[in-house]
Image (tube, rainbow over all chains, first blue to last red; front, top):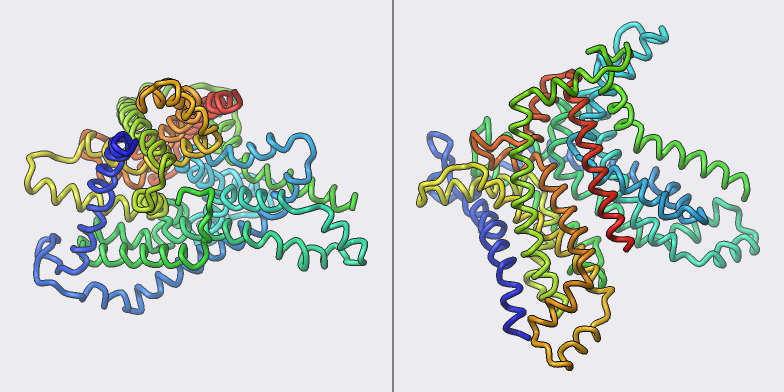
Length: 276
Length: 255
């Protein structure tokens, strides 16, 4: 078997080594080099790019990204939990309700983000409606701000929270809830002292599945935040395009990777059924 | 208890509206006669405009070609890998696949761009369709492996052992016993690979050349410029196209 297995794994090893790990190794090397005169890479080796990460301007962007991703994750959990509860309690159409949550995830990410631009912009549907109704005179600045970015992230990543939450709520023994009620617990006490502790693994999984892509988000802050709402992803892109500072862009990328991996090691329990 | 049930249902309705209304409204307004966000009557003019725009149709055909080649390669490579990993786990390979899945797209994109630029010092090639296809193969393999591996794990290992006992060699057991059983999973994986490839903007825009502009790149450029009803029509067509793909995949999964 071992020979055949080796042949079966060889193509994916080749692709991973050549088109994923080697590129990462290259930006790792670039991050220690110096920016060339025309934007390229040149020697000498230096850790200057990493030292620049400590600059208050960049720390502020890092902090903003954490803040926006954290807020989006929190809102996803808050909005996702009751929805997961609803799906697990519905007797018959469970699969339909579940598919309705997953469905938008299968539609184009770009189109879904654009849909919010269509709704939120100055001449968009919401502002047009409010003006027609005479509720406002000038359009509200709904698009191109942090609020729009958080909204877009919540909209995009809500399914990532609902699925793991649903999976843990589903495993919850209904007898435990009855026991709590029989013993005199009010619904709120049942929620905080029975349901939440027992669904903690789902909450943790949902939080990490949402926080990581939100932290590295590029398209949502770019389109819904306009030029104003810069997150780490936009900073990296900028270093490789207009700023033409590849060593610094590489250093930020690796810092972001390090944060993502640290978060995974801290919070993601190894799932025996998962890929790893 | 009854009252919380009603409240929960109302909440769920609101949540589903939040999830689905934006695309629904966008699709409805794609049929609007007016160029503004005021309903003035039914019209297909934006669809006609989209289909007659050569930049759009060319980008759509590029996207289709890229997605077809990338899906074919990623599905074959990923299915073989899933089978190999199912036989015996390989922490190093699943670790790198997992890493490729959690790496922010922008990081994957710029590292591939840096890699290509470095390679081009030695080879006389340029960015183009081929660089995009290779990038797409690389990021869709992990998706294929996850879907196919899930299917393999629900399969009875004894089926293959029986085939081997009955005199099949390893390749025959895979080809005639395992592969037919996991086929729905493989098709579902291919559809997922196709959608992630067709939809990708961040990585593609970084590694595409002058003649390999994809549909998401054109959509992005139009969205950046602001209001354009043609974009509503394109969006509606993409939503319907993706919807059809999901229906097919659900049918296959249910079988």
